[in-house]
Image (cartoon, rainbow, N blue to C red; front, side):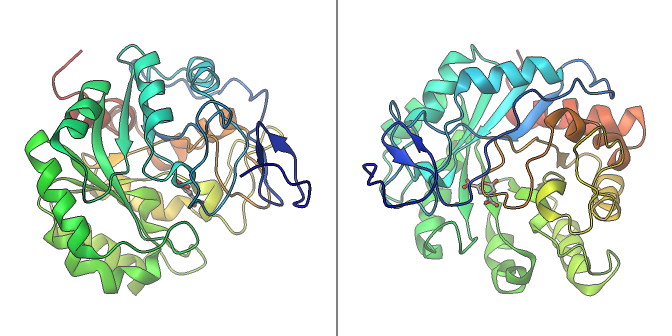
Length: 316
Ligand SMILES: O=C(O)c1cc(C(=O)O)oc(=O)c1
C-alpha cells in the first residue's frame, strides 16, 4: 500500500503503520533471570522491512519494521541461543522475509511458515532446506479470513512426510467448535499462547479445563506458554523494573508447565504485534519465566530440551 497521507501513524518504507500501532521496546533491560545454556526463543516474528519484503495485500494490520538483524541482536542481548521465527499474518503466505531471516541465522533459527493448499513439493523442499519445520493455521478472526478445514487437511497431508508440525492460533471461546478438527491432525500440533484463555476466569474452571483436556487426550499436542503481556488484564506490566509482571496469567501457565513439562515451549513474541495498551520490556518478560517454570529442571525442559526436540531433531 503506497503512503497516502490519509491514514494516521508513521510511515515505514512505503507503508503506513496501523493506527495506534505500538513499536517494539528499544533498549530492553538485561534480564535478572539467567537463561539456561542453549535456550530457544520459540515464538518470535520478523516484519519486513517493508521496503525489502513488502507486507501482504490481504493483511489486517500494517506493523512497524522489525528486521532479522534486530531480532538477532535481541536474542544475544537477552541470552538466548536460538530462535523459532513464526510467519506473521501481515506477510500472508509470502514467506520471503522469514526464509531470508532463517538463512541469515546460520542454523540458529528455525521457521514456521504459512502456505496455501496449492503449495508444491518443490516449494516445501526449499522451505525445509531454509529451516522451516512447521506450518501455521490461524483462526483468530481479527487477523485472517478463515480457511476451510478441507484445505488445511490437504496441507497437513503434504507437510506430514517432511516430519513438520502444525502451529494453531485460536481464542479459547472457539475451541469447542474446533476441537474435533484439531484432534484429527496426526502430526505434532503446537498451540500458540495457551489458546488465549480469558484470565479473568477461574484457571480451574470449565473453559481452561477444556484446553487441558485437549492436551491430555491428544499426546501430540504441545503449547507455548507465551504472551502473558497479551493475555493479562490486571498486570502489572513488564515495565520499569517490575520483577513479578502479569501475575494474573501465572496460575494458567504454571498449571500447564507442571502438568505437561515435556510439551511446553516459551517465546518472547517479539516484536509483539497488535498490543494496544503497552509494549513490554523484553528483559523483564524473560524475568517472568521463573514465575511459571519454578525449578531448574522445568526451565531446562521449557527453554532448551523441548524446543530442541521439536525444531532441531537432527541435532546441531
Ligand atoms: O495476537 C496477535 O495479534 C498476534 C498476531 C500474530 C500475527 O499477526 O502473526 O502473531 C501472534 O503470535 C499474535
